[in-house]
Amino acid sequence: MWQRLIGRGETRSASGTGYTSQIMAARQAYIAGRTGLGELTATVQTCVSLWEAGLSLADVQGTDLLTRFDMGIAARAMALRGEAVFLIRDRLIPIIDWDLSTRDGIPRAYRLSIPEIGGGRSETALAAEVLHFRIAPDPGAPWAGQAPLRRSQLTAGLLHTLEAALAEVYENAPLGSQVVPFPESPDVDLETLGHGFRGRRGRVMLRESVNVTAAGGPGPAQDWRPQDVTPNLQGSMAVQSLQEARGAIFAAFGILPAMFATNAQGPLVREAQRHLAQWILQPMAQVMAEECTAKLASPVTIDVVRPAQAFDAGGRARAFGAMVMALTQAKEAGLDPQAVEDSLSFIDWAD
Image (tube, rainbow, N blue to C red; front, side, top):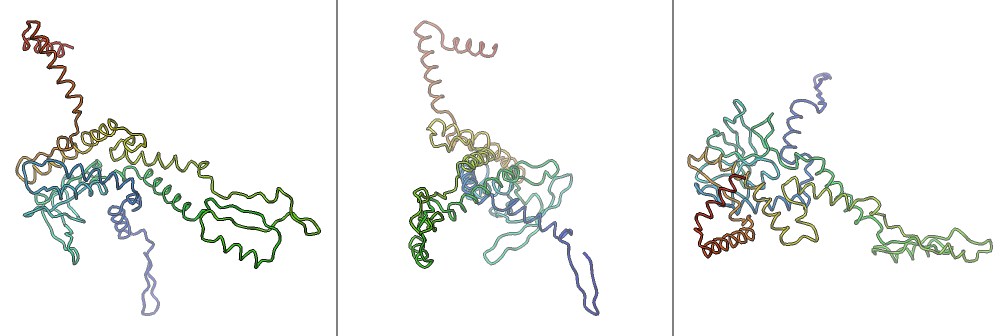
């Protein structure tokens, strides 16, 4: 920043790289995402909705403060921002923005912005009064979480670029349009004919013939062939790249991309749901339960797997049927079922 005095007036100019501008840019990127656009895609919103539904369905034991409504808010905040903050009062109050101080990398106090219909208000609270859920913290900043889009910025940018490009192509490109030669005519007639096709998808555009005889006769036959001006999207591999980008975003959120394949069958969908509940949402729920146990002074457990039915019911039924049949055959053979079960357990342990 430099200053220039002219008479009694003063002029200041900022280069845009000062401390204040850097803090503002960091805060904007932190709130809206790296570009603020990747989360606008339907792929990302589908992943966020699955996180919301899964955590809202979870069974919470040990506290009445963490309602299903709060679980849904926490899921959306962690999916898009990587962390969620609630102020502990007679109920949990969601926080839209916060600032904190740390000691040894552990939060000690918060300055919170509480949303209100007429504008937010600020409040200061100790760390014991705040529930701070975060996922994928960086070792350099263990007090902050990271959203999946922030950890996969290149893929999110590619997905947004491809969707925006395809949207522009389908909006502006002359899909199905053709250029057809037309004999020499006055400009007024050509303009009138051109207006007749305007505003119609797949319209025919006219131009004058360029191959004519000296006497002004009709043009050769090859000059009358129409030329298609539809862009070649297949050659650009845009559709294939879009599918790959969507699959990468699904994987970043812990959702199997095959779940959304056109030929996906019931077993595949159930396996994808179990994968999401067991390997993504349940570990998040365990971390949230630890935070609640430390701040609410009572043991808290959060279970996602049982309410979501994220277990192989068919496999369990088959295993149970086989076990009952084996015990029945052992009893018919005069063997002690308990001894048979103990021997099988010993064999499994020895192996």
